[in-house]
Length: 148
Ligand code: RB5
Image 1 (spheres, helix red, strand yellow):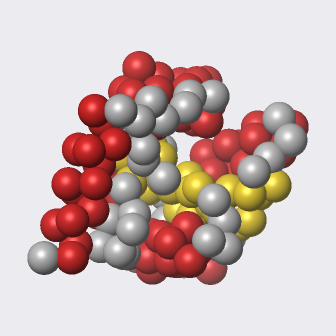
Image 2 (image 1 turned 45 degrees about the horizontal axis):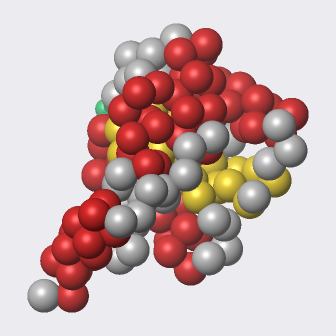
């Protein structure tokens, strides 16, 4: 699976770690920045939108976002049509974000979770499968909001 990664200046280190982690598991990882803390601060709406658009266009299948809390960058991504970005601080919610909400982006806070928890969150998100059924109807109701 091809996965897009994005972060602001607070998330560079954790994003890198999560990319390496998923590469080791065989995922193809595409980095949409931020790339280097020395380049200064990167406002989270920029990478949030980039990764959202990459997922929505099919350039990558899913996305991983990191900012200080995971909140701002996910809010930006969720403004892109077709995006369902979930902020998670533990693996149970991350698994349910896939199983029930068919989320296509997982977002974590570099100032909220440690590296091992972040890896467990990302693993739970990618190792789960959308269950469809009654959840499909609800997810469709969310997507209908974009149309009306
Ligand atoms: C940046 O200081 C911080 O506001 C950002 O990383 C994020 O936590 C916003 O939601």
